[in-house]
Image (cartoon, rainbow, N blue to C red):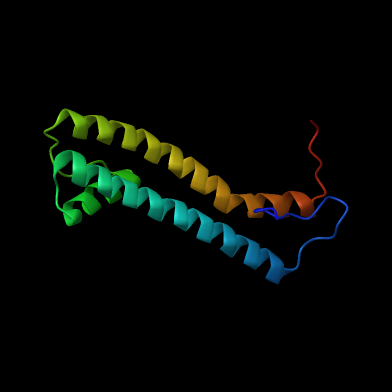
Length: 118
């Protein structure tokens, strides 16, 4: 079973219902990745800086949202974690955008019968 199922170039265009289901599936996958990343960020802030779970949530969600941490970091472990987590969050934005936009790009290219030369 493949995670991402797209119709082959010889097949017809997917119906609107199939496309909507595919798009919703990809949005759910992206949401799962974001939730998992938020949980990892919360745990990292909680255990490296000793922040409360609520403060850890704020800091992790602000980094995931591209704003930056709220609290001042005091430990070296916390600063290292925040740096690597910030780099990871930047990469996660690109990954989740690709996961969500893939069905849209595929549908447009398939509708235009575009072929990719490898």
